[in-house]
Image (cartoon, rainbow, N blue to C red):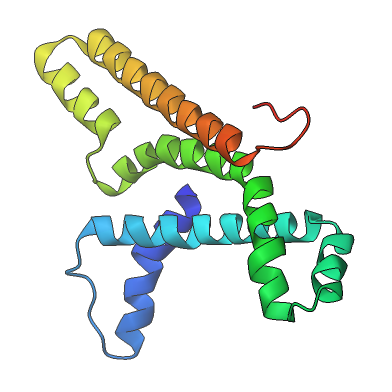
Length: 164
């Protein structure tokens, strides 16, 4: 992701400059958002595609047999099941995305870790500031995991052995 961020931050302005558009004045945060959107869009799209393929073919055939069109079968039968299948991996991606926010510091975007580094250096208490940030990262990660476990349990009703 760091390499992608560097390519987007340094390469995209050069590319746009070739066609006469200057985007050098854009905020660094826009390049960070663009990197995250492109990276996560690719991963989440592939995970959802795999979830759609994981829905048994018989489910689609059952939809057709009761007279549903292809679109109705997809929206009413395949999509809800694919969402449930993809939910655990989406939770892992959300936590991973939160952890990856610290690499934005390499472009000069100040995040939690950057703020801890600055405050720790100014006060001489770097260990304490990094310890606090570690607690924040762990707490937020556990909170995200808890939310996704609740979602998995909520949407896994009627399944045997549905545990998270």
